[in-house]
Image 1 (spheres, rainbow, N blue to C red):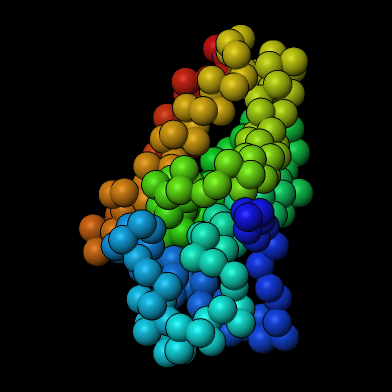
Image 2: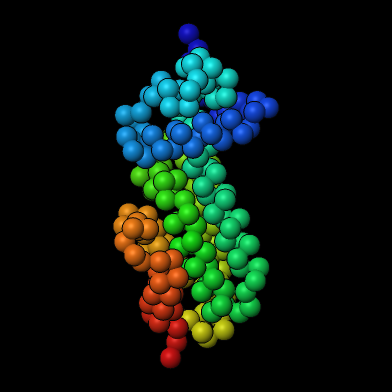
Length: 203
């Protein structure tokens, strides 16, 4: 008997706002309970739908994870691009890129955390699709570093290492940041941009 082909494209009914609500509920459940421990029934109960009705919007539980991770990368890339449009020169661009990354992570702690912890739960095909989008995001920052190195502003080392260092430092914010700590966004942006730029600026 032929195997059922994996569903790669979720259904897109007219109620996109309802789908957004479903994705938000699923993201919170995946984040709190773990992707593998969360069932479709859990999501249906949380959003107030019958389990069968949920399949009007998606084909599988993996659709919920895939759409969420795809969205967090696409939105992050768009946010970064919008911030860089205001910049002039590689140093200013990198400063704004760091600030944009911090802002986006704090504004999207659940979905960023989900991306970092549950990305490998996706099927190989879907992981590859997300990786393409992730590389597009990373390349925006890598291009800035290369521009700065060519201008003699940044230290000479593999630009990918600089970018991985920046992203690693910023991504971990989702683990420790809580608004109740009394550390505000501007303090974090100021401290991180100072530490990173001090480490890579020449002279």
